Amino acid sequence: MINIKKLAAIDIGSNAMRLLISNVVEQDGKEPQFNKSSLVRVPIRLGQDAFTVGEISEENIDRMVDAMKAFNLLMKVHKVERYMAFATSAMREAYNAKEVVALIKKKADIKIEIIDGKKEAAIIASTDLHHLLKTDETYLFVDVGGGSTEFTLFSDGKLINSRSFKAGTVRLLNNMVHDVVWDEIEKWIKTNTQGYEEVTLIGSGGNINKLFKMSGKQQEKPLSYIYINSQYAYLNSLTYEQRITELGLNSDRADVIIHATRIYLNAMKWSGARQIYVPKIGLSDGIVKAMYYGKI
Image (tube, rainbow, N blue to C red; front, side):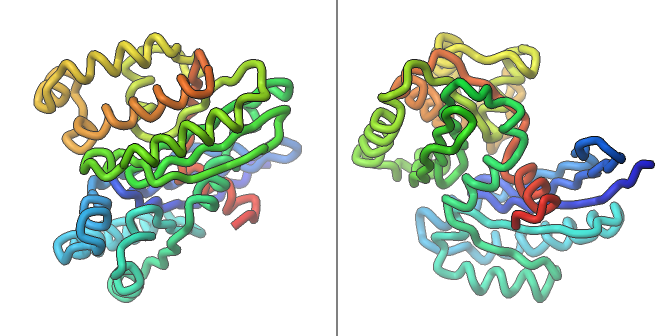
C-alpha cells in the first residue's frame, strides 16, 4: 500500500528565494521516499539591501509579496498539506524584517520564521547526510549562502562541532567580508580538523551544485581540489558577460559563483581536504525532511 504526502518548503535566502514541493512516498516496511515535484527559484537579492543599507527596500518588499502570493497559489494547485517558510541571513539583519514578515502574512497568507545560523546548519545537516557519511571517516560540511557560510564537522558519523560565519557570496560581492573574518574561519577550520588524519569536504549551495553540473561528473563522484582550483582560475579569467553567454549562468549566479568557489577552495586548503562531494541537498530539502520527521 502506497501513501503520498505533499509537503513544501520555502527558503528565503540572501541571493534568491525558493519554493520546493515534495512528494513523500510512504510504503509499508520501507523508508519514505522524497521526490521533488516542483522547484521554483526567484532571484530577489535581499542581501544587497540588508547588508548595505540595513533594511529591505520598498521595491523588494513588493517583489517578495508577489512571489509569496505566487508560492501560495502553487501550493494550492499542488494540494500541499503542510509547508514551512524560513528566512536566513538577509532577513536576520534587516531592521524592518518583522514588518516585512507581518506584511507577507497579511497580504500573501504565508507565515515566515527567521532562523539563526545554527538552526540553519542543523536543518541542512538533517537531510540525507547519514547516507553519505561513512562511519569511520571525517567530513567538513560547508554550506555557502548569500549572507553566511555554515561549517559542520562530522566524525565517526557524529556531529562534532558547527559554526556559522558572516561570509556569504553577496557580502563578498560588496566587499563586506574583512580579513579578520577570513582569519577566524581559517582558525576555526584548522583547530577543529587538526586531530584528524584525513578530512573530506561535503559542499552544499546553489553555486557548488552549478560547478558540479559543469564538471559533467556522476552524482556520487567527488570533485578534486585541483579541479576546483582550475575552475576558480577559469571563472576569474572570464568577464561577467562571458560567464552568462559562454557558460549559460543566470545573471544572479554569474557574479557570485567566483566568491562561493573561493570559500570552498579555502575550506579545502585549510582542512587539507583533497576532495569535495556535492549531494543534491540544501535548506529547502532539509526543511521538508525535518518537517516530515517532526524535528521542526
